[in-house]
Image (tube, rainbow, N blue to C red; front, side, top):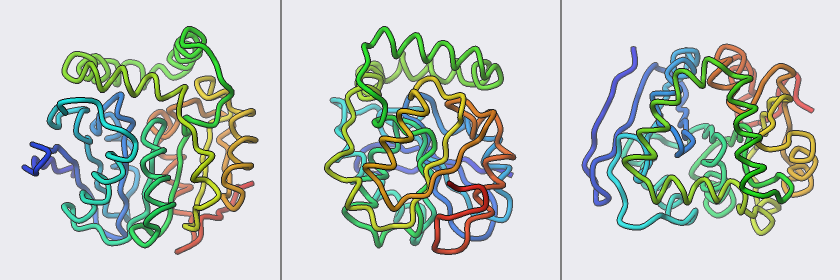
Length: 253
């Protein structure tokens, strides 16, 4: 059963979900949607203690006075792990949430045991905003379950956190990993959907291997940008396959 929490912090009310028992997992949702969009994955990760949180400026958590930087989200993530009582969890970061998680793994590696980047933005070739919107629309058609379930959450985010939402959307194109990828020492897995059009899968994967050379990569042949939401059982299977303390897994490349 998924339990909802609302915790008051210095940044205002923070909404987070919790389920299960076992090794700690922190699921960092894309800030363009909200934690509840990942309910199927939270339930599929049976055998883990899973926490998923809406960061400030997204979902049901408090708005922020001005859009946060990736560094501010890293500081929030560092603090929130203590709020939720998570000690060196596996951190799963999806899409736009990947950069703050990568910063944490680069600068404070003792805070997490493993890092899983699911279809992260920031590795794709430079493209126009119009091109990104078109690619995102193609992914939306390829993942009808996510589109139906997630669109109300996305629209609520756009209405409640407009400036933060638009900043995150721009960051999908402008994010730059080059200063941090080589510094990651935490066991890292990059899990990609081969049909991901949002991040231009093949080009992004090759770039990721350059910037995080020690990371393992895992490919879902039928997955699109949000395959961990659309295909939660498949994604959870790979998480359960991870050896303790090592981000290599069967099927990783």
